[in-house]
Amino acid sequence: MADRRRINGPPGGTRPPVFASLQESSTGVANRAQRQRQPAGLRKIFLKTGLIPTASGSSYLEFEPSASLAAARSNPKSLIPPSSALKLACTVHGPKPLPRSAAFSPNLVLTTHVKYAPFAARKRKGHIRDASERDLGVHLETALRGAIIAERWPKSGLDITLTIIEAEDDRWWGDAPDSHDASWGMMNVLAGCITAASAAIADAHIDCLDLVSGGVAALVSDDSNQSASSAPRLMLDIDPAEHRSILSACVVAYMPARDEITELWLKGDSSRAALDKDDGRTGHEALIDGAVDAARGANTVLAEAVRESIARSFTQV
Amino acid sequence: MASLPPIAIPGQRLGPLSTYSAGPGTHVQQSFIYASIAGPVVADLAQPKSQTRPTLRVSRGIPPKDQAGSMPAVPAIASSMMSKPRYNTLPAVDSIVLARVTRVQKRQATISILVVLDESASQSQDQSRTASDNDNVASILTSAANPENHSSTDELRFQALIRKEDVRAVEKDRVVMDEMFRVGDIVRGSVISLGDQSFYYITTARNDLGVVMARSDAGNMMFPVSWKEMRDPVTGTSEQRKVARPF
Image (cartoon, rainbow over all chains, first blue to last red; front, side, top):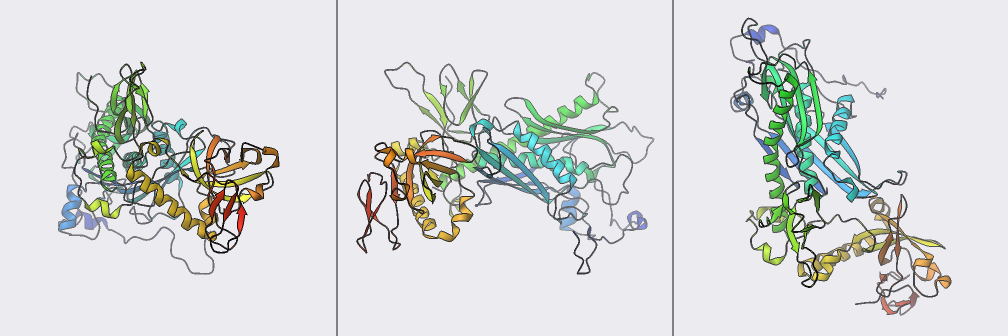
């Protein structure tokens, strides 16, 4: 409810106008970020557990900034960063008793909250969770529910809270929204959320079948001139700011020890993928396989972070 | 037979079910034992006489002393900023708990569970483990001394009931709850049931169960003088409680 006694600013925040002529200028102010990695190359992940002492488990995750963002940080030419890198914190509270009004549950009751910090994205977020944040929470809950052994914790609840400190862009900031525009950044955020939440749950010593990690793959077409071979290519771990157009993307939550997928989110048109001739897969199969490969990569970081957290808990006693 | 890893992470395969049986912190899939929490792997050897296989478990606490030496060295900076590990064990049937009395009624007493004592740790007489239990008791004392923070912390703890007939084993029908517990007492009890949606059920009907710490009306810590009496060392008055046998 708006406060009617004061003169409020616009709820969404304002941004200075950026003119098209500025982007075309030769000063290099607004160079589009370019992907420097191989199609199957993943960004580095920083993941650490146990940073929030009052929670029973916590983790902090950060993606490596893209090459253009790193260059812009060391040698800024514009006040507008060319891309953004995911940063998020996860806390796990519990197992704790259910509220008095709740019905008896023989299993662990999982609640997930995903919240963007107001400053996380280029467009400011409100303090109340909006539809996309609730959507992310539901996706995350599905991903984790398949991994947690819920019957080991009767009559108790587990609260998982994720705070997105810096979100990924949905597209390059200078691009106008176009027809196949979707919230691609959200998919990267979900993959990060899954990995971070899994680390925090392991830090809280909640029984899990496996460490579940998230991965993203996408079909992108990067050609600036439409005449060239415009068949979209499969790329892992995309930074949406680095690509001209993303046709479809896929997030999975994957448990490598059991080779199981607990959550799958596929968006867009995957029919026009340019695969090898002898590749019998369809576009969406290739997407899912790519996302699983990305999740396997994230899992190596996750396993190492969990080992670190265990080693740390031994040295402190 | 492959050797066991010193530390397991969730999803790590530990051994076949033909060699081991699965203990706490593990789960079984396709006749293999997998870790389900991160921690040191402990193989509890079976009794020599019996034919059972050794039990594999993943410990939540600190590793045994012989394994501690083989732990990877971790920079000591981490140790200063972190507190000691917290155990999030749930009350289960037959587990011994320490709880604070929050309400005494005619037919039952409501208590909130503060600590679930670990069976295995209390038997192994691990020095560091007993030290952490003592710390827990100290924290219980401080929280018991502050009546104003009762309401805020009780919401976060598991609630339990001691019914009138579960207070003691003899003369169950003559129990007067007011002469057994007072609000603020610390009680050692044993869980008899997970109960309904909101309460666990706890009994004190054993010699070693009952009130372990209590303050008198004057606010002084009392010492036990018999199984149903505690005395205030300052004023000399005695009050009635269902006292746990001091060890």
